[in-house]
Image (cartoon, rainbow, N blue to C red; front, side, top):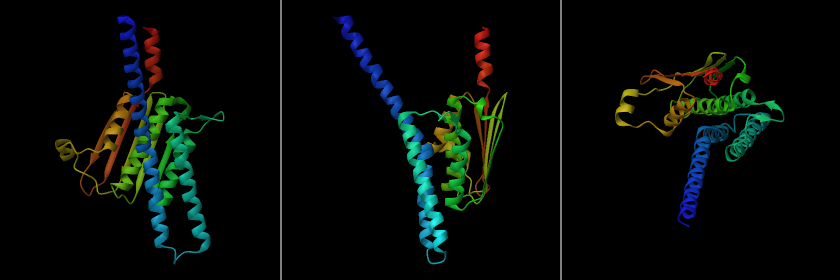
Length: 233
């Protein structure tokens, strides 16, 4: 009876840990991508309201369609976060399409030039890498718009057989990284990016100064090489 009771208690604890981990995953994914998209949607509606008397009906219709599309995509991301969906939809890999759609929405709704390129074959990425990179890109670009108040953003994702590198550069207000570390004021966005990069065994570097913009450099090793080495051992 004692053994059965202990096993039952352990199963309950394990179930609660799984629930907590899943809750944390959903909360982080909502923060990293969905909230950033909703912020830009709200900003786009506000900008449209200020220009109602100066633009044509056709322009208003086009911008409202963009807002509707952004909300639809937010709901799609929310469903993906809740149900843990992969990037394989209808037999196709939508990582590149979804990422480019997100960047285009942020660019249009905030009226900010964003130069974004994906170089390489996304099929080399694992599902975990795609999920993390998508969230990192959303968080990095969203932070540059929302907190950095950038006027121009450039992001480049390089995918190769030896690993992945991502650079996000903006001309925003920047920040004093030493002060943030000293005062422990790094926000949830930075913490989430650090966690996502480290979960991929990668490295992240911040270069920023007040009124001099920010550059984020991320390197992620090739996971297939690690798997090959483990099999060899």
